Length: 591
Image 1 (spheres, rainbow, N blue to C red):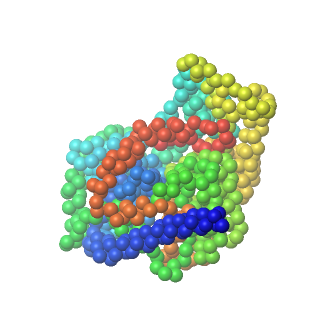
Image 2: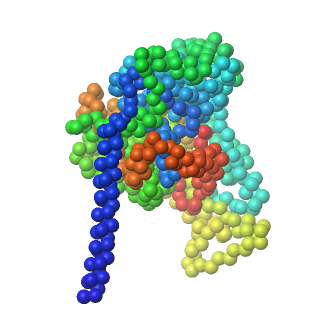
Image 3: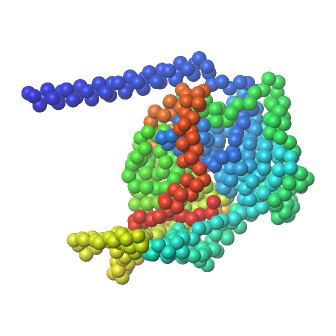
């Protein structure tokens, strides 16, 4: 009896706790509805949205624990926000601040596509730059189709071409007597070259130069088309960069010289009497949950961004988790496949890959969803390489931007041996183990010849499986895939030439394909059903606190530090260190 009473007491406490959470959620939802009803979304008629592209942008919003303000935009926030604004009669145009975001070529192309689609709806785009700081062309491409492009007087246009910098750490590891042991398939799988080499290998140099050339060719053609210039004339201007604003205006790359307030006044005049400037992030927040209306056809939108890892998402406090967790995404794909209301699956990929096991797990789930009758279309962001390309192999159609980094059909396996490193500072490690290969993944004992033979056999098996899956997914002979595999990364433009993707374009081209394959008429507006479902309460808190940013100043400073360039570099290098498992990952890609 005592045990039963004890169990009942525990059960009551659990039920009370659950009831408390439910009550809180209901009250929070009621408060949100009341606040929204009282103040509305605050968007006036004759509005001009002001969009700031001068900060680094990820493909997918990743607020995490500290990003409570909810104002950091992602590439897809802009793409979806412009789509909403294109149908909003209150929005007349957008003023874009640009120039120091250091956007990569494919990010610039995705934003360019979204801007042009916005213009086709009868809206205007005015861009202003205080200077195009980056030597690459992504920032300029993002706004090259704008109705007007302004630059501040005596500012500089640095855009000249495309370049890549790769840090090679072999000398550092030699100094600390750390021994990298890696096998890779094959010569173009250069993800670990930064650890094992002092310079570009011939294959690494060849592939990187081709990527940069492809980026440059696409950028020049796109910009020349948008500005109605001859391609040779565009190249001639770029070859003289850095150039002053007055010079590039004379050559037709921009339309106006002036300050941001003058560009803003121009946008307001064009919008009409009584027009107001509205922050784009605020507009996106206010309209984020607008749907296509009751009864609209549903398409599952699965946004796979970040490294592919095993297990489940481990950030329950975040509104959107970072990374692509194998268990979480496989569960989400199965749920989308089983949902009778979902007409198709649209998989947005922005990933350099990662765990071979998790990549295969996700592809298996996608294949089962496809076998259950769901058409699958892939939209590639900046990068869909190695494991990020592998998971696309269940798709009926693959859409990539001309600059998207994709392919990297290869694998590497390896580890670091650091027993001598410890000795430099008086640390000696000694190992004990039962079983011939108990210390196989040890960072203290290097692989012997027999173990290396084992590692090579594993790499061969994984590589052959990768090639076979690509051949099956692309419906191409294995021999033809072998010619474009060997770990080589391609741009979207080159990948299309080799049959690795189907079409060149942005997110909305992939949406059109999903409609066609699922029998939805082209003019029908669809409703996106998001998988995995966003978790956490911070999104709600952010909305309620949207007008009180001072409440979160301390956390905003911490968030700024965590998002700083030095921290990103440190975390990227840390994340690039292999852990001994087989990886389908393309590291060391051009910016």
